[in-house]
Image 1 (tube, rainbow, N blue to C red):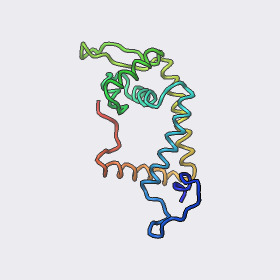
Image 2 (image 1 turned 180 degrees about the vertical axis):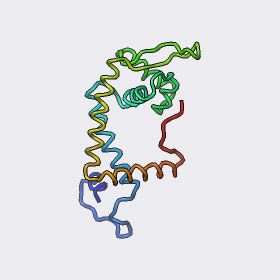
Image 3 (image 1 turned 120 degrees about the horizontal axis):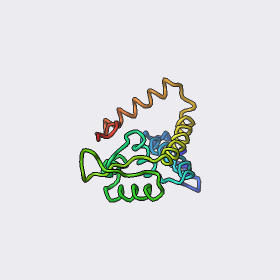
Image 4 (image 1 turned 30 degrees about the horizontal axis):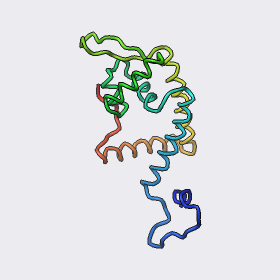
Amino acid sequence: MWWFDRCVTRRVEPSPSVSPEPTLRHALRHVSKQFSGQLQRRIQEHGVSHAEYVAMFALKRLPNLSSAEVSRWTGVTPQAGNQIVQGLLERELVQRHPSRDHGRVLLIELTDEGRRVIDACERDANDLENQMCQEMTGEQRSELMSLLRLAAAGLGSPISSPAR
């Protein structure tokens, strides 16, 4: 019972009515926690938080997002999104410019330094993902992604790119 052994410092026998096998939810949580923790440590070496990394990841794929769109991508409130953007602006990792379509909207894009930082973070994230999947075949990795998409859809939260 790998997930339980880490929490209990003394030896206890599990209840015979409980399966010694971890549940799917525990396995998902374990992998997610391990991956997130290791990713956080790696991206911190580049001077960005996880929320800043997600914002920069979005801006690399969809340049010229508004602050509200960055907030949605990052999964935070508009106020928290503004703080993330402000921190990136202060470190000159992003810049703002007026939208041609909407006079009051300021669009955000990565600077050259921002692209350098997100590229370094992405290399580390890809290395970690490859490490996580090193025991899988390419087919198993594709199947895992398909199963995760089905699981997310079953929870009413499909895995897809957020709409602009």
